[in-house]
Image (cartoon, rainbow over all chains, first blue to last red; front, side):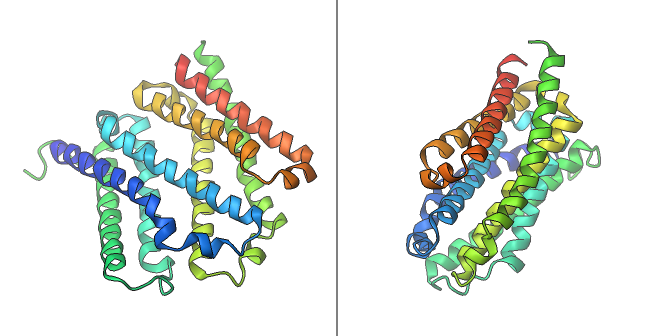
Length: 147
Length: 134
């Protein structure tokens, strides 16, 4: 089980790195420049500032998943706290993916459809992984389970 | 640096972060986020509020951590990375305030501008010191 979680962390880290890089295309894909033009300067600044800090959080998650897997799987209270936070973070994002965002204004191109499905898959994977890691750190999953 | 001092610093940071959580709700009302976004494209409204909620969530989680379990931010490599991240997070917020935000609006609310700059700078200092000296 531990090996599976470690492997999951590597996959998650690489996927989050891809998400962080792909995020640079989101403003273009969603036409932020034109859509933000009508906002007041303050709202525009807030919008882009919030976006930047959410993106930076994804970068932190990437660093933790790729560089600090041992700690995330180590059973410490810090690991439990961090895994709980990341589980909540991605669970909310998964909920929003299905029930929160109204994507009717987004162009229904093949690229956008594929991107949406890939994102959904990623969020499901992250929820499963951090749920599994939390259970592991709480001792609910035993070494050797799933063998 | 003494662990007690670092823990005390993190608890103070926790109090400041709790204040920032409240300030986010006050700001939403004062600057009328909902009114300003009314009539805009749905996706813009949704992204704005979702990002806003995630920022409040991350600040709330950090406030809880700092107030309840500051010691967890002082143990091991992951804690150091998290502290370093928040040192950068709040340090960059100072830069954003000074270089990106509308100067005219900052001038109109100079008192609050200086106050929040002080808060962000203090938070950057506490988390950076926690990352270096743990």
